[in-house]
Length: 304
Image (cartoon, rainbow, N blue to C red; front, side, top):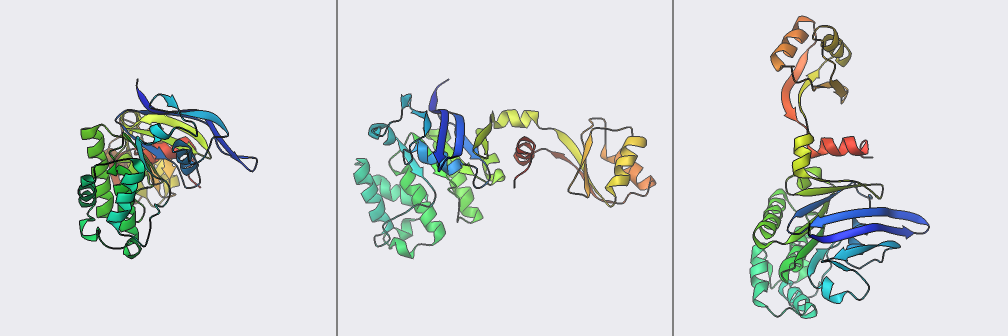
């Protein structure tokens, strides 16, 4: 298995406290790796070490098969990144900012600037000062800068912050295209589970600075169960009916007014009839499949 990026027992300690501890992360060539966790879980800290902005307290990072050191300049040229909020020379235009980026990256194909601006719907704003850009425009300019020099690896820390739904979809589609058509490896962090679910091939779930699980989305889909969810007026009576009248036991109460039934033999028709005959009011009933959010909550025990 060829890994573009690996971490080995990666740990960062600040003020005597482990911000992240013993992180083992494996990113395959050409995949989209979703780095998932609540705010404060340690995602940005790890990404800062990946990009050599922070030095690990212990452990190592391997990029393209080489261990990252403070002098890994050539390795780092092969990646593009956004860490936290992208910063620019505000008194310069968007196009000028990208020209400067090309120069310090040693990238001579200046013709790609216009193509990249057009790709992110920034062509009309290319000659406007960045200080006049909206939050969403600056986020898109940051993504443009990250992909401008044709990196082999993209590291994107919450790249859809500040974008409207159309902009978020545009970025998702772009990253999928870069991965599928050009073989670019993408690591994208988010605390929005639905965003990761819609784009990632593999997810790494981090919680309280610890790596809880690395798993492919395909495996999650295969593990996740189908269930019937019923919103009722009285969950206590509803569970009594399920046990005593229908002989069902594989269920759980969620959100105080909902019951999820996992028994494969259960049907919505039989459940609805049993509840109606026993004076349990049904507000809603339907079949569902567990999502990445369900998997995440089971794994972490819930998000603070």
